[in-house]
Every structure is written in structure tokens, then in C-alpha cells.
Length: 339
Ligand SMILES: [Zn+2]
Image (cartoon, rainbow, N blue to C red; front, side, top):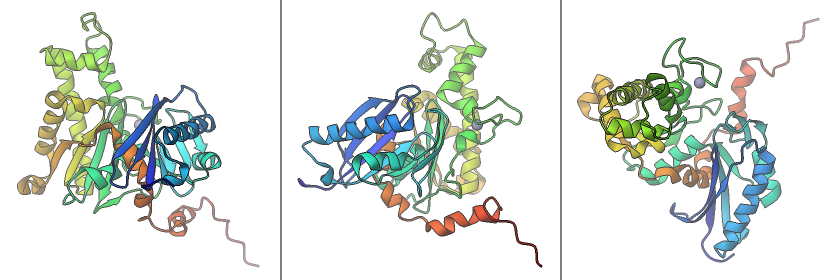
């Protein structure tokens, strides 16, 4: 042991994985980024994460004994009780025992949770004002993620999927989504969706520039009417989805992060205006609700991952969490006939 007790946060993304050494105050004192190789298995990737963690510690003059806890955010559904990644379509991981893999390498049992929930927890601990007790942390990047903090608790839901804003239905019978349903929000407003909408609306009008979401924003900034119209429609779509969530959950803030939030004038500010326009009247009247960009930026999932133990500590005991499934009869044995 060589001083301060530290935490390690790991944020596994679709193309890169960030590892950070985090102080009890939420400060990232060292970090390392490794690629998330296309087609990599969970076991292979965890082996790389383990060796990179050892490297990160060695480079910082620390040892594993200096580490209090490790948390991992994954871009999919994970069960925090078992540490199993249940469903992670971007990476092709299905029911992968990530915590077991990592524990076998580092001899510390890690906490595992969806990245957007980890990010929401980081906002609770180090981002938003303490007076804001209920909020949505919405990430708009290549996809759409959302974590929910209600009355200062991180909301999980019975299936650990609370906050699937990106896969809530925006248009009945709309575009086909990777989740199997149609019309999901993510198919209309994510960075990927905005680029696809642009390619449909003005395929030959990129002015010889790269076919990227950034180019669509650049065109809109230059006054390109089809690009401006497209962004207006996409923002309106997202605003409706966000307002539905706000109305259902009665949150007092929506914190935005992700790649599209660098566009304050073209994205964050008009989205705020539109959400406040659509907000339920009591919210508007009391000026209680607000929409703003995250202060933590892209480090939020990594920082939140490092503190997952504190988020999961508040959850109900495992026995009561598993009870609802048996009520549905999935695991219950059929009653024996009376003799
Ligand atoms: Zn979907």
C-alpha cells in the first residue's frame, strides 16, 4: 500500500475502452485508453483490460493493494448482482460472466453495470447540484443512452434496464431497429441516425466533404436549408421522447452528454427550448425543469463505474430482486396434482 486508497473505473465502448485511476473525490489521476477490437470476445477483452490495469497502476507508482474497488460500465444490459453482461449487441456479447473473468485475473470482484447508468451515477456524485435530486442523464452519440436518478437513487428496474430511452417507441411502425422493434428513438436522433437521414434527404449535397454526422452539423451551421430542416426535425423527435420520460418520472433536470453535445447552438440550446415548450404545464409554471450539458463530459461513465459499489449498495437484497421472475412462472415448478 502506497498512500491514498484509489478506485478504478473502466468504460467499455464500441470502439475504445477507457480505464481510469480515480480518487475518493472523483478526480481521475491517471488513465489509459485501449481499442475495443471488432469481434473481440468478452474473455479476450477482459484479459487486455487486466493487463492494462496493471500497467496503469505500475505507470502511476501504485499497486493493486492501493485499489479499493473496480467498476466496469458496458454498452449493454448487465446484471449487477451476478456481474454478467446479459446483452450487448454492439459487441456481440450475450450472457458473458465479465465479473468472473476480471476477478480471475485481478483477484478483486468488480461491479458491472450499463455505461449510461454509471454516467448518471457520476452526475449524482460529482456533476449536478445536490439540490437536484431527480434527473435523467441522456447520452446522445452514435446511440442514445439514459440513466435515471430518482430521489438521489440510481434506478435499475426489475430487469436492470430502466432508462432505455433509445429503445422507446417514437413512431408506430417506424424504422426497423437493431433491438427487433420498429420506430425506436435511436433510429431517428442518434449521430448515426442523423447521418442516415441526411443521406436520404440530400445524398449528393455534401459538397465533396466526408460523409459524417459532423458534416451535417457543419452544413447546417453554414445555412444549408435541408441540413437545418433535418436537424430541426431530429431535435423535435428527441424533445418529444425526452418530455415523455420527464412526464412519467417527474424529474427536474435533463443532463445531456455524448458527441452531439459539442454543438451548443445547433443542438443543446434548441433542444432545451423545445423540451421546455413541450413540458407539462405545472413544470413550466414553476420553472422547475431544466435541460443542460454535463459538466463531466465524456469521463462520466468511467468515473461513475469507479463508484458503482456506492450506487449498488442502495439496492434491494438479491432475494427480493429475484422474486418477481418466479411470479411470472418462468422458474416455478408446476403445482403437483393432489392425490
Ligand atoms: Zn430499438
